[in-house]
Amino acid sequence: MAIWQEISKNKRAFWVFIPLLLLYASSYFQRTALPGTIYETLADEFSLNAFQMGTLAASFVYPYALFQLVSGALVDRFCGTRVVLTGGLVFLAGIFLFPLCSNLYWLYFARMLTGIGASTMYLSLVRETDRFFGRKNYAVMFGIAYFCGYGGGLMGSLPFERLCGLFPWRNVLLVAAVISALLYLAIFAGRKKITLPPIPKTPFSLKPFGYILRNPLNWLLFICANVTFCTYFIIQTVFGKKFLEDFAGLSSAEAAAVIFILTVVCMTTMLTTSFLTRLTGNRRRPLVLFACGVCATASLLMTAAIYWHWNSWCFAVIYCLFAMAAGIPQIFSMVVQELNAKDIIAQSCSVSNMFGYLSVAVFSQLIGLLLDCFDTVEKSNGAVVYSDAAYLTLFVIVSVVTMCSFALSWKIPETKGHYLHLHIS
Image (cartoon, rainbow, N blue to C red; front, side):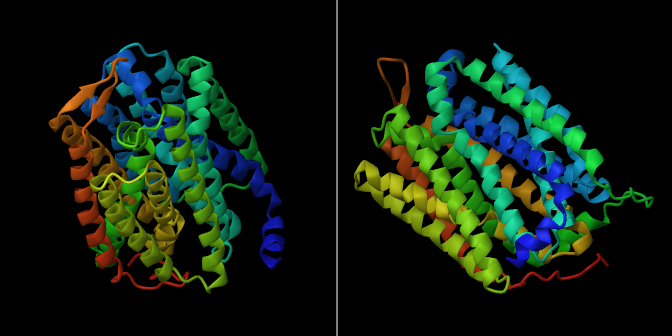
């Protein structure tokens, strides 16, 4: 009960924290819903092949990843609330433009704007959670923030697929954009309820990035965290639903339901592990090992299931294992903060996020190229089905990468909620 008593002392912070949290959920809806949930619809309407679909996914992820560095530096310097008010305008421009596009290149441009704006949401939430609620309650509050944020991803799976079956997909996305605009206005109004920190007068410096990149422990964490995240994210948002339709023989609604369950499992794991790390004295390492180990196990099981053509429900179970492994992102985020200095927590997260989303962007395109290298079959409705050999090759590669990640995870030290340094040297 003590934690809730401490949090209740800072009630005014919720005027900004809650709409910021919901706007982050909105950004997660945008990255989850497109293009994977309506893969066939977009492919048919714009005549896209797998590589172009991967590029559409990457057009969001590349800007999102690269602007992490800019956003991290700005958030540490100016505070999350100020930064998200600027980035939110770019985000809104992208999400209003996308459903109005009739050209593939405009789709790419709209997703780029969305990615740039969304890059400010997560890091602002990282900094403001720490500022509003303190390090003692950080694991729980950050877990709740992740849980709610991923709820946007949940809405981008089955609910979005079902709504697009009832209404034009463009109208659904326009309504989502209007909701995001209302949340932005709530943050704009709520900023007057809180005291914003003063803006530092010291000149901007690139020193923190050098500090982060020279820390060898960071590289271990970047690899382990981002392999787990990248595997899950690509399954959730790009090719996971398509695989279930092509190989497992599920309908669009059934495949979307599996992605929905996948996201629920991830969110549940996220919330559970946040409380668990608090109850175990802020121990991080056991959960890091758990995430990497389960991801490697799921990859091996997926390879076996494809090779021996297991029943459809087996793939749903294995997808849930990937979700359990990916349900530890807040723990990885806390470790990367604590392996560095207290005064650059947003920048340390920004570098980790940059590598993670660059990996997603690169591998989305590489997977598209891989699938296009194998023979395809065209259904009567014009949809393209990728071969069993293509998917088997894909998951053999994933298995090798995830097993290497699990081996490296044993080298990551325990932080127990303490920073390596208070300030960069």
